[in-house]
Length: 126
Image 1 (spheres, rainbow, N blue to C red):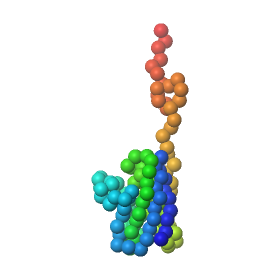
Image 2: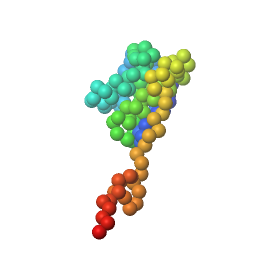
Image 3: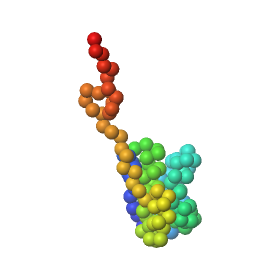
Image 4: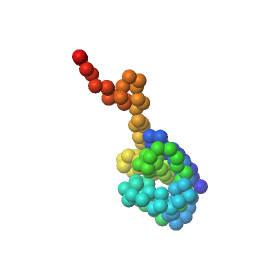
């Protein structure tokens, strides 16, 4: 069994890969139940299909925090890192596809005296 973690925004995913039939379980639910949108399912499955391991490994994921899109991208990074642990030759293809880079963009904090992080209150000269 190979395990790794992936992160995106506030989401943290712990990914476990083991030899199997290609079943993906996220927080004890099938992938299609946890991610109803096809875009999110494709994001999660992208590293497996790129390396042609769709039917070779079962994936068990524990993910928490953030939103659905952040969780999907965190899972994608965790799967990619676990695949590289299995076979180092996958690294170049996954890197070219952008799956090996942790997207470090997070929400900027709100500043005091302002409406949001960058938006100000309306200025009135008189």
